[in-house]
Length: 410
Image (cartoon, rainbow, N blue to C red; front, side, top):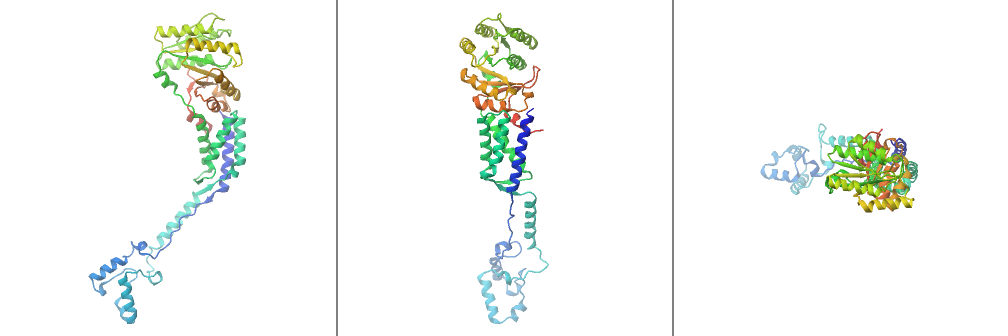
């Protein structure tokens, strides 16, 4: 599933990752310097203020400073002028100059900051780099990304939105690199695609739970896209959740459509309302809704004949069905494998009869994923379910995060 799109996204990720590697620079570790200021030596030697306090409480002979050590002998040997200068120096509380301080060789305190500096530098060389990309750095990779998206049946406006999002995330901002540059590109791609697909979210289960009963749902689309099968799958799903369901055989034109729905209804254990072939579909749907109201049925699922949006007579018939039975939801059904054709049809149906959401069938066979990414963005209406197989349980509630994760997993 989505193998072609996965391959193209992977190629973009690797190429842009290489570009980031080229632009990346090592993070300079913070330099640790040895200062002669008292604040930096507060842990290893007393401050000048504390020395003054000690000298006030004891004689000069009892004063002991760890570093440097000052003896009375040295004091006596020095000229009187030097001694007076030294006394005034300590009185003022001024720190000794670095070159005047004698640090014993065995003391290793001053080496510790240097060791920390080397550790930081080693860490920077191994893991810490940063980069800043300019627009020109991304021009070629982003062009190739847009072409890859278009080749995967993603609509032009959607491709442009994804590319623009990736660009805004990466251009002009300083970013820190961990171990893998590909992770940065992949994250930007995931965010961009998720934003596009998450633009319109609708919780179908929550809606059914809270809506006034019966909930009437009409399915529409062109011939052969899986409307009838999707109705059977959704009937099974709703029944498993504890709802009562009735289906309306509103496709009175296609030969065998009524019988097909009747077989599905029997297998999943729901009631079907049907008329003769070539009958008025609006009448069938109306009867189904009235049956639901009279028998406290929770949900009515109405099938309709496949039609193109350009078929004026059938579109007028669909509008009549909507006037007579007032559906709560209009759901467009098409095949994910139809790609851009499905996107275009969804847009045109939405213009003719405003839809409330879409179901994409045969998603498990879709190598590109373009329709699923594009339809919600183009129509402004959510994708509700994905058909993932032939079984009645193979109807998966649409989750944008799950979909995006599938594009980046092997």
